[in-house]
Every structure is written in structure tokens, then in C-alpha cells.
Length: 254
Image (cartoon, rainbow, N blue to C red; front, side):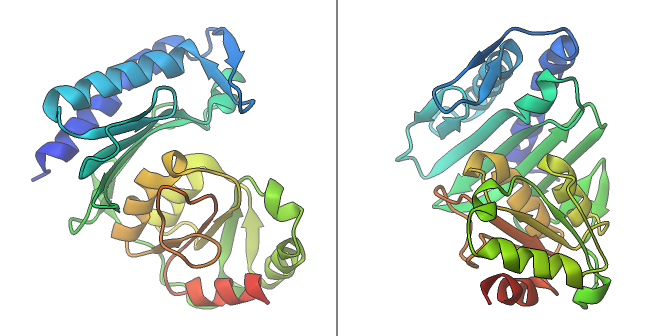
């Protein structure tokens, strides 16, 4: 039985999906934010709907949204929302975008909803209750050997400018195969056992709050590239099936 918070997050994600679907492929106007990232009418309207839905159910909770910023961040419980994670894909009519809704309580991520309407994938998890993808409980793989591992990477721009880039190349040469699925896709795949490792170096908490809980509840391990727990200031990711986490951390740190 989902908690009231999970039910509200799912309601919000589905409401946002209606707006997003109605505008996908309709050549929406795009403006550029100060950080040079794009924003569309779909981003703004979806976040408005999500915030209204969550605030109606939980008016005392804080809210941190990609488009509207931080509100009541001193609250014990804070919603973390990216209405369209992958706006660049959305604008170019690529299906690699999703809605990300997470709940942080006392500094710990406890709930996550990741909805990818163009892919027909809705994933969610709540601390202590497992991870689910389209009503099916999912688990990470049991692969324990790097030589048999499948890895995926996302944005690696800052890593490409660091000494870690060579180590990453050496790691790729050791694994079974590597891909670059990116965005929500590789986290959903990791949670259901179709991938073993995900590496990213350029993101923020709104991109990964929800999938952190989903991967963790599927049995995986989710940290930054230094092995630290995910928090509001996290900017990189190492997510694995748990079995490979220490080995990948070591490979990237050598």
C-alpha cells in the first residue's frame, strides 16, 4: 500500500504527463536560462501542475523545482522536482526525457518517481518498500565481475577535462561493453538488471533525486564519483548493482 506521499507524487507525475504529451512534437517556443539550459512552456506548465498537486496534499512541505527554485527549504520534508529532465531531448523530439519527483526528509532521500511518458515507463520507489517499474517489482543484477559488466555513461564533460578521463577509458577497456543511454533510461535499466554501472559527471540533485531512491530500493548502490552519499550539492554519479561499486570507485581513483 503506497504512502499518501507516494500517491501524491504519482498523481502529480501523471498530471504533468498530460501537459507534456500535449506539447511534445509541437515545436514549442524555447528560451535560454542564465545557465544556458533551455526551458519551454511544457517545463513551466508541468512544474506548476506538480507543485499545485503536491502543495494541496502537503502544504507544509518545502519545494525545490527546476523552474521555480527553492521554497521553504528549512522544512523537514522537501519535494525535489524536475518537470522535464532532458529538455534538450524534448525540444529535438527525442523520447529521452522524463519527469523526476523525489522527497527528501531530514536530508535523506526517501521517495522517488521517474515518469518517461514517451517510453511508456513509470518507475517509483519508497524507502523500505522496494522499486517498481510499470507495476512490476524490479531488482538490480548480480554481476560481480567487471569483465562481465555492462556500463553506461551520461554527460561527462567535466570528467573529460580531468585526469579521471584516462581512468574512465581504462575502465571501459576492462568491461564487457559500454553504452551511453543517459538521462532516466540508464537508471531504469540499472534498476531492472539490464545494466550494471552508471557513471555521470555533470548533473544536479533534481536530475537524480528520484532515481537514487529507485536504484537503492532495487538493491543497488548510489553515490557520487568520490563515494559520498547523494545530497543537495551532488554533481556526479556512480550508480551500480552494489556488487561492482568498490571496484569501479577504485578504478576511477587510481
